[in-house]
Image (tube, rainbow, N blue to C red; front, side, top):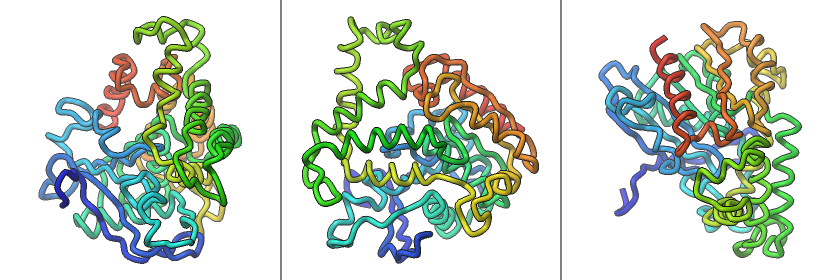
Length: 343
């Protein structure tokens, strides 16, 4: 392991993607927490969300919490396109002038499965937990590898990217690519204006109507809405690589557990393949992962050992599922995931 690097790399080799394209020397970055027990049955898989790297989400891993490293062996696989696993930002020399290959959630989960099996000899996963894009990965795991997944917690995620969610991402992509730094299909330099515009779009979609109506930003010490937006959302993506963000937007928009040879696009069939104990935990005020998507999915999880819909009663929109500084939402998530793990 290189000095200063707190993660490991799974060398997947040359991988044939769903698209038929061969991705040469595909690399999956991951970090582990806790100890794998002798039975290898205390595993929690915790895939990353949009733009996030493992250290952005590891705050949820804590002794006494739902993701407790004293009891569980927790693996965070970094989603392709996040700058640590294979991404546009770290494969330029490898790929040359070829565009970054289109990667799907199915591709990502297939390599994650290889990681847990080949690197650790794991055949059963106690829980796949994920928020947002991580939640969509958890859903893909449950549908595509039901023999391995005992439980799945889908937090502010869905089985398929809805048309409305797709539209939100179109707006984000349009804001980014309107920057003059986007030329010939890629960013040739940092799109400062585009990243700022992207943040403003996120500010309206990620947080709820009630959040702004009730001026909840004042609880964070801001004197005005503009101060809040300038200090948080205008800079929210400034440290991310824009080409990486585009790659992950493509993964997100193509998200569909049934988009594979096994299910042939039949979402009901894919949902019916799930046998895990399922916890669907949307935010009541999420604007792009609308809780009604989970409500429609729930009765189709006909073969799940159990399936519950537990919306987070929050005014923090999509952020309710990643409540680093929102104690009530954090407590709600911890309590429900703890209950799921005890089932």
